[in-house]
Amino acid sequence: MDKDNFRRIKISKTAGAIRNERLEILTILLIIIQSCGIRFIPGQGSLLILVVLFLSRSGFLAMSKKDFGNLFIILIFLFINNYFGPSSSISKVPFQYGLVLEAYIFLLSYKNRGFNLIIHRLFKALNIIFVHALVGFVLYIFLSPLFKVTTAFGYPYKTFLYLFYLADTGEGMARNSGLLWEPGLLQMMLNLYLFYNIKKHAPIWFLGLITITIITTFSSIGFAILGLNYIFFIIHNFRHRTGLIVRLIFLTFLLSGSLIFVKNNIEDKLSGKNTSGLVRYRDYLIGMSMIEERPLLGHGLFDSKYLVTLPYVSIIESNVFTTEYLADIDELAGGFTNGLLGIFCSFGLPAGVLLYVISYKNRFSMSSGYPQFAFFLIIALTSITEPITNTAFFLLFPFSFLVFKKRKPV
Image 1 (cartoon, rainbow, N blue to C red):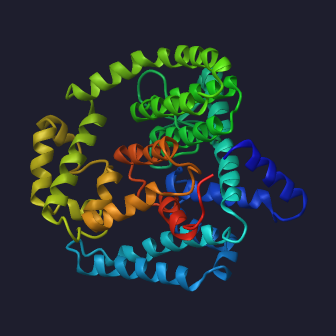
Image 2 (cartoon, rainbow, N blue to C red):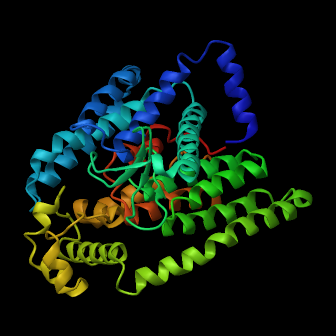
Image 3 (cartoon, rainbow, N blue to C red):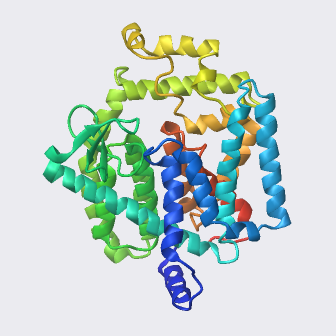
């Protein structure tokens, strides 16, 4: 997504070729909120499926026989996978159908208008998330007494007037979560935003501001992904050697301040005392055991109720956590969070590999080579600690390859 692409989009907008830009940005925001956002109301996920489908209804008219065939195969696979899977979660299929239709129809609504337009709308939506998160954290720094603790939305937040949110850690500084469910999801959106701004050669001070906002999430995965974007910045700016040195010095100085936190955070999680790190390790062991048990067909869509019926889950938990900790929590507290392995657990290795291959070939990176690799890793690495692979937002990436398959990267 280079400056030329933005210029072409703006020209077509003045010519009247784009209908309602604000409504289209809102639609992407709703997909993000439905997939990764704070759970403001009960049934929010199902309600937003209907809203997004209504706002993207032009996509139904753009459906070709090929698109119909793609959807038919996907929906039939989901039904068979869950009907014959041991999880017996056939009741989850209608919601999953809704997620598939939501992502696919949304993309189809842009099919005859070009993929650059989707990138432009996503960029604007990510900008809103960035500004909101930045303003919220600045307010927290200067007006922290005004932030009140709430668990009204199923997660401990510190909130100011229920407009700005930070994750309440219980001690020390709160972690920036913005409009997202938790900080690990905010870092993903901010790193995607940083990726696009690097690609369009945004000013170095603005890249630094995005970087600072990512640091406020205090996410270990977020810092790792920040390193990927740092490498992308070097590769993307290598031709402009005159300004590159100054920019590298600035970003290196900025990033170095976070290295101490990263080191301490990783050591804490590997020490065997950090609950978050132990949960990630537990989910990795459970995921690998589930894959080993049913590598070809998977277990179908599953939830925590199904997982506690598996005999090795309690064994893994007793080996990972202390007896005192297990006495204070419910079995499988926090649910299964490894979305990366969750795909293979639900659908089996063949279908999982296929899904990740076409996810890698997504059209959102608008490039080949390292940029495409880095963009994919932003999503993949985040999904290690966040169950985002079963969301409409994640499905946009593999489906973009199916809907816009013939389009060459820019």
